[in-house]
Image (cartoon, rainbow over all chains, first blue to last red; front, side):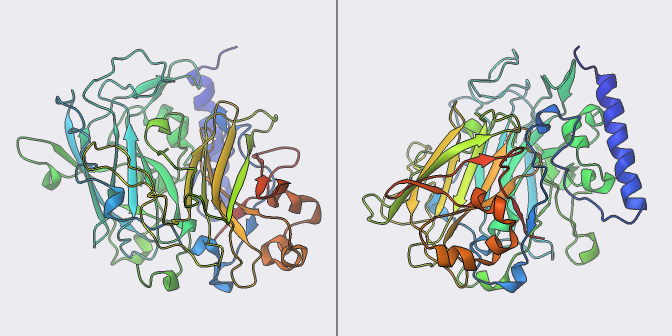
Length: 257
Length: 201
């Protein structure tokens, strides 16, 4: 029998209650989703059940994971961060500017690192062959971009407000509008792939992917802030979204970077 | 709140992870992503395998990233893994000469991935290994593991991470040599022979 939104809502509520009880009993705050999160059905067979092996990076400066691939100007072109200029015509939709700062968990800016994004078009359709949603493709929008963070850790993209879209987790499942982000840090341990959402989306409570982050404050950190100061007159609306990389970063790998 | 104030360290908390989803395929993979070794390099090794779910089904929508040292154990500092072509706006790829150490390989329709890179050298007390990061639809937070290459039993026996792993699971981290310089390394996300995954708290 097909799952309904009601079924998923009940599972989301149960997961949240279980989390609140864990925290009340003294368990640490969980900043990341549990890999096994039943309301997101695809996670069920794709998460390990054995506990991970924890590695204390402070014991060994030689760990491969304490360094990270290097990126430079030849890995991007000048307009890779403008997703509205990749075709001959203008894409359809509301132009937006997304800006933020890449920080490590000590609040230090992370410079010269690669940020890649991809997203649906304004109608909620990805330029991907396996996409089954029958919303229109936009011949002037692919929806993929990249940039390097600057000397203060800032990044900036110009793009189109993505649309929400249906998916097949359960009957009448819809993803809130989002932009996918892939981010590198100074250490491979800081690698992050995530999604940025837009403020006040009514789909938030129904989406098992966003709700997989069961901690309220952590979930809020995935939602950009409308920032009028970033809006470009006569051109685009501005959103601010700072990113904080988790995972240890060894200061000794910074030399020469 | 998504404007972070670095002057208040207590408010600097990590951005949560999310799944890579099903549609990264036109954004993240790049031409030459699997060809990490400089063209014709004598120390080239081929590492390949499947990614499987808890029922043993291969994942056609996983993404494997590898990061490894040069044969002398040094960590690469060359940029240029995904050089862009300013004329076409597309990818120019690696230049075939420099070793960047980074590979990114989407699994194919059979859930299979292949990377050609340089044989990693040992660093410090560690046996030689490639660092691996796995992403997939359905995987809410990426997973780290390592590919250790077989051959030097003493080095493997002395490796600090392998020593932390129960004897019967250690082999999930050690590739199998199929022919000289070709190694198989399957990644099992769950179930029987589940791969050992690593965290760096």
